[in-house]
Image (cartoon, rainbow, N blue to C red; front, side):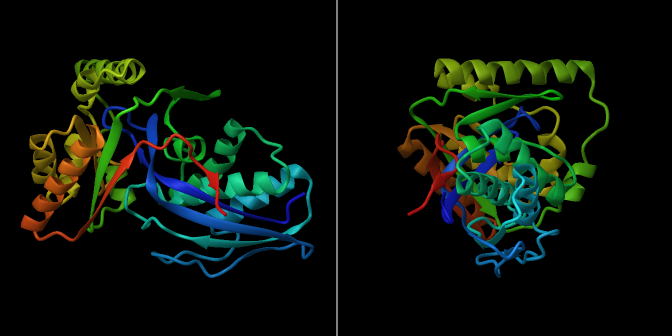
Length: 309
């Protein structure tokens, strides 16, 4: 049995425009790295966390500690483990920062003990971290970060995940404007009731997006990336949102929207060159608005968590 594991989990885009709380996919060039080592102390220890953000090293207040504790209990193990986490995702970016930490912890602990749990169960453990971080057990970030590819959450009760094919030439361009959007505020602005007419339009777009992904119909994917419920209110919290989205559209993006609760903005594109052009256009718009930012261009990751040498 292994005594040490080092692993990586990618950042992720959740909601995917019309798929609020039920759709997500990972991007492959940024993420969190964890190293977990087993010992006989009987204690969970979290070393000082490297990278952006200020996170607690108290095992009861850190997503890694909460997940590791739950998994060890279910495995009937009294081992101690030491966790070393390197953050590659800025907390509050809307790119699944807590989800990456949660996913990679579940993946690494599972590997340390011979992989007793399947992928779906790992997602359920990772959701414990999301509950600690945001107050709810949602899977639209942790599922794709764990498993890779487009994931749809069909149901939480019973828990049911659907793997959706990723078209071969589908890329994502993401810009993270360095503006603060508090998750609590982004939740509070959402309307409690949605008119039936609006809901029907949203359901149509979800159906179109799923069908477009299955058939690699880029035109249908683009037509379906329209959010009638969440984007109209959340976009008002993101400085420069309209200008950046317009720049992406003019540069050839299929479509996009807010990543998670923001402020990151994603756009899906057909091909790497198109994605680079869209990223450059978004960056130029942010420059004109005098907004600090980071940009990322990535093929949709199909691997999720993976081992690191």
